[in-house]
Image 1 (cartoon, helix red, strand yellow):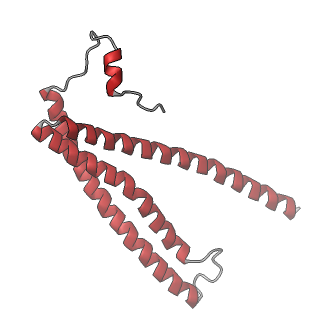
Image 2 (cartoon, rainbow, N blue to C red; image 1 turned 90 degrees about the vertical axis):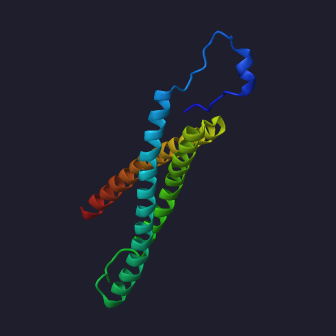
Image 3 (cartoon, rainbow, N blue to C red; image 1 turned 30 degrees about the vertical axis):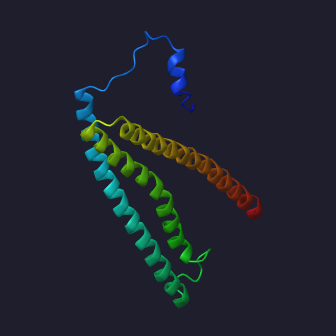
Length: 163
């Protein structure tokens, strides 16, 4: 995962014969279509975040009440913990949806008014989205390995003590 080393100064150090990619009318059409779909996905993402937030609050309240009535008396951890997990996941999901929404807004403006600065901001948000999702994927994969090691260790500990 390399960082972009391009700066305006590197433009002059390269040979003038190296072509700079151009955005064609066909490319603008693709970007416009992409903007519509990413806006749809961003709106859907905000709705899901809202539902996760409300679900987390509801689960926290309902399970806390159920814990006091004895339905979850043998639960190994506090029952509001399940609601808290939903709230944390909703908070984690906010950033990629914001990046996606920003990309959609700026790419729409860039296509409509043919503004290079808007295109640059849109692409910066797309880069941030990809970077965030990539980092979260690495964290998720690493957590799988940690959980697997924990589960195997727990199973071996129980197997040794059951003998």
